[in-house]
Image (cartoon, protein in one colour):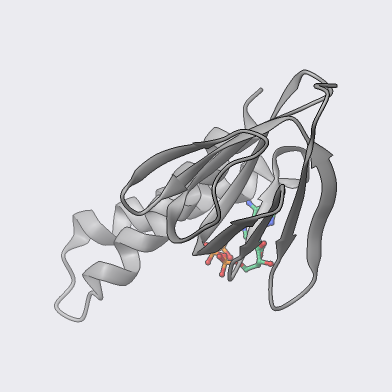
Length: 134
Ligand code: ATP
């Protein structure tokens, strides 16, 4: 591991997803991807639906997040999100099904289609599929 590490915590309304020391992170902030190394300046930002990439003991890891907020302070990164899954916790078949369902809904153009809801479901599914891949 690098000399200095970052304590990475992710909390959802359901549970604590992780609390672990990591070397560095790249997060999907709403203004674009943001890299975080030890001794990063304090920061609060909102997150997009996407994939958090981080390295732990030099090994790359991924986590899917469905938006939320991130705080960086004193070598600690906290993410508060509605949902978050580490790559190896993701049910890939479920995410593929959710992607197909959202795609089909958008193609069918039903009169009562909630377009934003379908788009967000599609984005969540795609980010889970990406995070599940090594
Ligand atoms: P689905 O239609 O498959 O339920 P969704 O995007 O509507 O997908 P969410 O409402 O975002 O699901 O999540 C509900 C719960 O299920 C959360 O706890 C989330 O972490 C979990 N979850 C959703 N999809 C997956 C998946 N593919 N693998 C593991 N956990 C998942």
